[in-house]
Image (cartoon, rainbow, N blue to C red):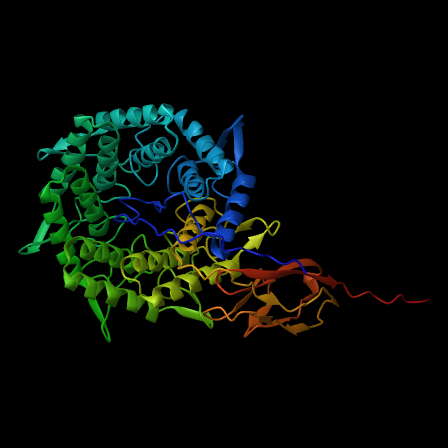
Length: 555
């Protein structure tokens, strides 16, 4: 049995949390010292798989396909493209100082530098503004002016793509020129945030003009349903306001906070406060001091996705309490977090997952699924060190570890959702990207690895009791218990898991059972893992399923 010893070598480095995915879509983590634990190990496994998926266009220049199954489809954006994968490698470098991660981050940047942005693709999530954001972050980490030159080029191109209205600026999304978005993902808020960051980096007042202009335009499309409460539609011709990060108030508030940080102009903080007051007014009581948020008034859609659900609302409430001291924001943030906890599906003790919506698929990703919920709890903990937040963040991580697949145990990958393939949920693939793929999941593991309070020096790894390989024939049942020991009784329970269960197999209460069908002959590589949340032990178990030999008939 191979033993994985993840040594705790360094003291805790707390996250410096920004207003969020919008204002800082990456976890900002100082580079040294850092701590090693099971979660950093899984971030490294994710990076190893992404390295294997990289396509080298020239020496040292990398791009990534959308998925392992779609190796001819490439995108540039933060969401499902090379910029998002590069962002993950950049953060791995920022935390570990491992030069190989920097090589891949720069390889992504070098590929993006050669791309042309003249097709009308302007937005933050899919294209130009998000790519520019990544290039600024890469320039800050490396000092390579090549990346800043390209960010300036993108900024000047976006200026040329702008339209003027009501004293401000907006941009038309290339997907449908008749639709004008307000929000962070596809609209003026995300592009304005990029201009604010470009101004911070260059001090060029022209960029600040366009950042302020985006805000001015947003104010012209703002509604005030009650005095001092502000909200926005997702599209300018919508008739109802929107709460979400991707298309509504949460993302716009995060942009306004970024602009306030860049200018110290209190008007942006004032409007952010008004937007937050409206979010408080939209809270739906779910009983016992818990709150949830739908997409907007009249909607019954309550999502667990950070992109357009309660987790991002709670995040901005915590940020606004941190900035203003308004206790009501803290009360509603805690109530929203409690609702998310209350609705968790506890697979086994202390292992949690959430659906995209109730009754929908169980997505894995950072913006779409359980990684995003776990990441949100890690963020909440940085504002409000409630031990239950870490419990749920770690429970989400443990579920993701149990769903990981391995080409080798040093490479981890995930399907974008874990339920049976369905036309309702789209193609089931091993995605590479930030939005719903490995890069985003890796960022969650990375953030959690540096959020955990450290154990005292000398923690001993748990020990998995030996299992051994199995050899059976089809239709024969293989069953066994899995157990482990913790030599020093670390705080919290031991978690036992298996990756990846064959079709029809079960692992319930640490008991494995499987009766392979006639068409399931073959060799199956399973990894059984025990972890105390800091260190781990594992065993590679090979289950060989043989066909039934037909008896020869003598004539």
